[in-house]
Every structure is written in C-alpha cells, then in structure tokens.
Amino acid sequence: MAYKVLEVLLAVPAIIGGLVLPLAARYLALADKTSLKQLFNDSFDTLLAAGAAIIAGGIIVGTPIIILLAGGDFAVAGQLLMPLSLATALIFIGNVTGYFIFALGKQRQIIPLYIMVAITALILYFILIPRYSYWGAAWGTVTVEALMAVVSLTLLKRWGLVPSVARWPKILLATAILIIGLLLPLPLILKILVAGLMYGVTVWYLKLIPLQKSL
Image (tube, rainbow, N blue to C red; front, top):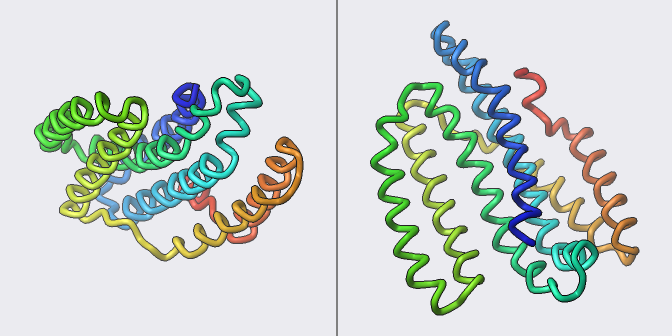
C-alpha cells in the first residue's frame, strides 16, 4: 500500500521533466549556458521543495493516511512511508538530473555507473531483505536512490551544472511551516488541508516555485 501511494507522486518529476527537457535542448543548441544553468537550478529547487514536503508528510501523517485509506491492518505500511518518502525525494532529484544528462547527450557515459549501482542494489537486497523483510527493502531503496543521485550530481558537476544553495534556507523554512501545520491537534483531513494551505501561502510568499519563471 505504501508503494502504491508513492507511485502516484512519481508522476510529478515525469511531468516536470517533460516540460524541462525541450527547453534544456534548446539552450544547448543556442549555447546559452547561463539559461541552461538557471533552468537546472530552478528545476532542482522545485523538486527539492516537493521532495522535502513529501518527507515531512510521510513521517508525520503517513500512518494515519494509510489507516484512513486501507484500515488498521495496514498500519505498518504507514510506518514504511518514512523511508519510502525519503526514497521518493531522492528519486525526484535523480529524475531531474537524469533529464539534464540526457539533454547533454551524456547518457552513454553514465550507463556503466548505473550498472554498478544496479549490481550494488542487488547485493543490498540479497543481504537486507532476508534479515529485515520489507524494512530491508525500503532502506535498501533509499540507499540505491541516494547512490543514483550522487552519481548523477557528480557527473553534472563535471559539465558545469551544480545546484545552487541560495534558495535552500527558504525551502527549509517552508518545510518547517508545513511540519507545524501537520502537528496541529486537528482531525486528519482538516489538519492536512490547513497544513497544505500554510505551506502553499509560504511557498507563494517566498516565491519558491522558481520553475514557472523558466517555463
């Protein structure tokens, strides 16, 4: 059940990637490095903000949401949302970096590294799953996605694309506001609505949807 919930969220980076890829290709064709770097940072920060919100939500209200959707028998699945939400945020980062690697035409260079990560994943799963069951699978996924993100970011750094930390304090502040909302002593649905409103207003006030400027 936890995997199904997060599978829905994975549509977000796919949609953003579909919007970003043509622009990245255009800037490369025009040799416009400044616009390309701006697009990369805007895309990265947008998905970083979304990923941070998912992590906060998964940790704080993951279990109540699963119980609401599937019943008390699936409470453990709610606990799994903690590592899986972290994995989802890492997938967001991996997706945006992957789109830029593809736009740069460097996908052949990263394939051997992806193969190494895949082999590492198999070894991890063979070690962790027999001992820790679904928890081993969940944290194994986190480890694998973290490796993928590190590999992608390392390669992009070689080609001049490095995430800027300028907006990160604002992202942390918006996430903190969301956490405060999710901790309010309210019924679950009302709590989510209030927290979402608080987060949305904060994001708007801090202008934390930078990608809309690039698009």
